[in-house]
Figure 1 (cartoon, rainbow, N blue to C red):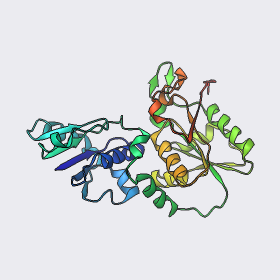
Figure 2 (cartoon, one colour):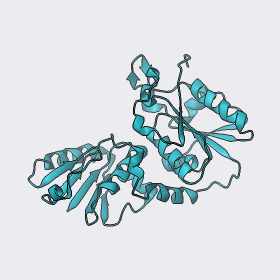
Figure 3 (cartoon, rainbow, N blue to C red):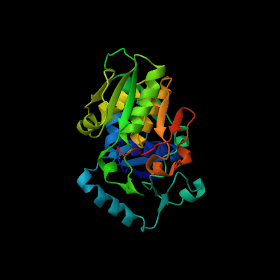
Figure 4 (cartoon, rainbow, N blue to C red):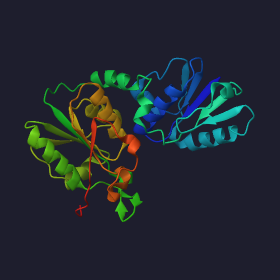
Length: 275
């Protein structure tokens, strides 16, 4: 039997989809990973008894359409949202497709696989040699600046990040704040840069490694920073790790997905002060 897993989104989403796939795989099941370009570059070999078919981004939607058509072929079934048909039902089919549902962003997807440990080993080998304790700050702008929910964009106000930094600074004198962002130049113009703060310009994997090596972290509403914090915590970082309450729905003041709760992750409310 073949399990087909196709990725969607960027590194954070792909890592959740990868974990979900490894948990759903039957012991003797062969896995075909379609895409996973960013996760593969970070993790290297994805799994035993598997192959990966890289798909250039311009062709990815055509590939997805092909596999949607494939679902109509007799002998193909689908698996979604982290659930799986019984082994007896799956045995009737030659190929089972794991849809690229983004609902699989649950900490329980990390149980039963070694994705966190493998990430930890990889980022440990990318150390920058700076012995100073660090706190990462992930500020997502980009698409969040134009993604409107309710009265405005889901972009978190800069004042929220500054409040979290001030709290950590009071209890951790000497900490170095490293800001990672998809738009570092814009962040540098909009946030107050203190002597203990630096804006890092790095690619996706170097940014992920830098965040995952930090002792504490301030997250944006992003699976990318969630994974970096999870890797850091699994490697022994003491925290705190602070995330915006509500994630994309922070204006409502409630968690949009309680499944994102973790004992090591603290949520603080966001208040829009006109940033």
